[in-house]
Length: 157
Image (tube, rainbow, N blue to C red; front, top):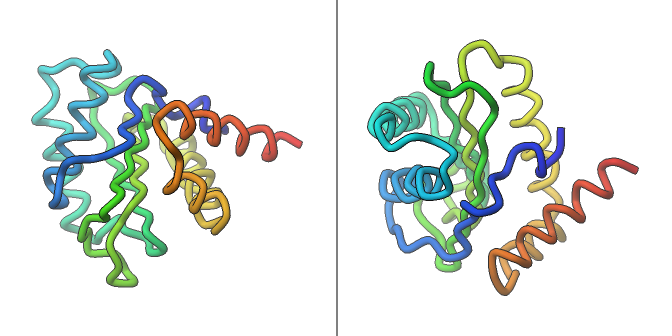
């Protein structure tokens, strides 16, 4: 499992405009729609699944990271996207701090193992302070994409 297998590069949002949890989720889903990864007609179903998942417990894992994720029957493969908020967004994180990096993962019910592996890969990499710092301070989406490639290269060695 690598970022290149998960993250839809054209959907990377390098400066979220949203200021609340539900707005962030909607902006990210809209990014996936704009990139052609999911059809617009399942937008509300995906948002509902994400919001219901957040109601169980926040996916804000601390250190400025959130990994919102959900399963939906219309999704046939693992789909991921990354978004960054320079200002940070209150997301109900376990450490109470604002979130700057969001990685959304979507899958079907059948992809349980792949879903768990994806969550683990993202969490493992984003918990590296230097990597996280570089992502937060990247100039733009292109540089974020390059950093993801670099992380994949180090993981493959």
